Length: 394
Image (cartoon, rainbow, N blue to C red; front, top):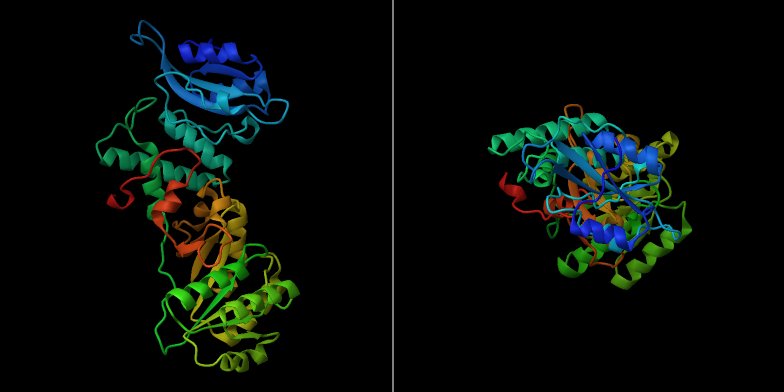
């Protein structure tokens, strides 16, 4: 197939204002064929800007149906001009791929049997590192959900069907949203935070401590077993001094009970731990021994929301011996989407999932932390800009 000409006013204006090497539109029988054309004619560094369904013939009647994909090449400064990316290509456009996927990052696995919007989401899910089994399960469930609601699930486009909202509902049904930490005056609760290096455990401990100390008016004690990083101990000590909280440092399991006793009559003990590589069995075993001596009531696995699906799965597997009871997602403000990490946390036939307790979305203590919310996580599932509504109605 040859490259199809741009055929509407916006497209003509786009063509006039830019070099032909910046923007080109390809027409094919399905999305996979269009992507292959882009690879061959523009190279693997082209970025997908728009996808839409078109029909030839007289005013769209009695004609064949095509998929039209607009792709762009980066300019000399390494970015696609915003004014090009934001142009509307036609009046019958399907939900746009706001992620600006690079063609080289998109597997040629789009299922032509799916409605075009779901083909686009399939490619975005795969490019985000979601495994094929999960993608197939989500999309099949999404189609079934649409059918159960009496909405069109056949045809190349299935116009009018809110596919992204159905996909969000599908993912939500596989997520476990847990409760935040609950404390009661006079009843000491011990909570440990564990996780890989660099996910923000110490800052998260400080946010939780400040929230319970200032807002809930609970007596809070801090304990750290992160003796591998002097800076981490000093950082936690600084927070303890600012909030006037007792703090203890523990280096070996035998010292744990005495340190807990020295914290006094507190309602909540928050334990900060050293970051461990999920691949380091020896370091994980040391952590298990330290936590066994502390006997925490809850153990929260802290995960970076910007992590890939594979990195999140590795963390879940590596920290499984610690037996985490919940997960905290940090750095949500830095994550372009949540689909990678959520796909690893979602339950399946082989995995029961782990409940999410908190999310953090910045560095401010104690402001940038909140109990996990389904709507916030779902609204940022993919980079496509579609509003979320009535998630809990399904």
